[in-house]
Length: 605
Figure: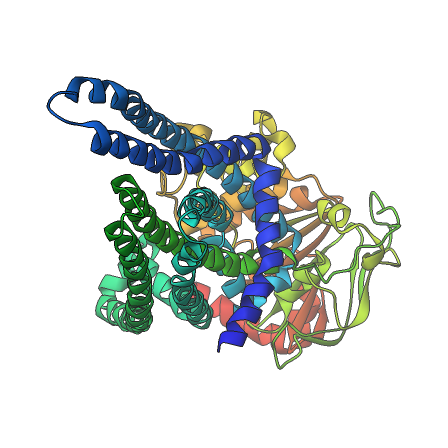
């Protein structure tokens, strides 16, 4: 066990250097000031011990009723310096808190930036497996504050080490082995701390999923979005019971760790106490023989007393350093993640407008971790300047087409061609700027209605005319203009704004998509949350909105699909029927059957 702990300690040294490097790069000047203040603060306690010895020796040697005044006069200077050092200590402590606060803010901002940049750099596929969520959770929750915690703990170690070295030099004047006794009696405590921290870290790694689950159940019980179902289906008891069960498991594990740590601390503390008693006993024997004065006893007593406290603080700080270093491994492991989508070193220019169109050529694709192909040998052409609708059941692979088109993933086999050029030859950022998408589950930004729309093209954030035109095109102008402050009204309840219906949110998202002036438009269920009146209003402008664009529309509603130039029916990752609405109805196939069912439902409704 000891050898394993030593290996773990050595393994952490490079991580410690990287963690301190983060602090140095984020707050270099503050770090220098912090180090200088710590050195000064570390010397002061030893000076106070020495001056106490001087004061006691003066008082013990000369004080008597006849010379009391002269003795106090001689003792006054060291006593005044002790008081002055106390004031300086308080001042330095306040300065260190201020410097540390500034460091902490800068370092946290820097690490937030690193995490955000990496999260945006990684492929969408990174978010497809639970291991990635565990890693991101540990990087954000556990490791975010660890660089500054590492620095604080290291500061305590530096400060206490300086004090301890000076104290050890003082007691070494009496016997060379006294410092060794002081330090050696603390070594079992160091081993105990390292062992505990290592066990705690492994326990945290093993229980990350349970930590995330407990946070999830806590969130779902208190979130506004789930409040209605919690009450309607009486789900509160189930979710709170699951939360309590998970918390019980976590609590039991933590308490077991703390219980073992208490036993180890008791053993290590007993050894340290015996070492201190042995040193003081030796000095008392010397004093009884006239080989030491009262000031020597006071100095050694304070040196051992403070030394034991300092060593305990050193051990605790060493444990915190070890813990911070272990958690920093999570941060650096996350920051070491790399995207898997290859970016061409010399990308070819993307055509400003398509002349032939987009073609999926024998594309086979499987989502990470899935056992089934979402697409298998899939071939489809989207003609330039035309609108193509894809209809089919849930799970047929329709939305996957848009994700591949945006190059969030690369297919395992086959190609996706823009005017005959494989999209992997283009710069992914340039490719995505050429595509505007309404996703099936669009993001609800809790900001003003105008900014919600402007998220489609941030260059238009101050262009109110463009924002208004996009809102009109998507049918969102009416709901927005009825809000208390129009386009300046904050949407969503997170910050006390106005809430929209599901259909109104979808129209805002649709406006966001139309604001982006891109040659390719991809709409995933654009009317799914609209009522029949809103759908009819939007469809009346549909041709005008998509004129001159290459558009792909994923939909379950045949009343929406019928406005496309070409309709493809998709089942199990393949195209099974193709044609215009009239051709497909006339063919009497699956599309025709589904059309009749939808029309019957509309008439009955």
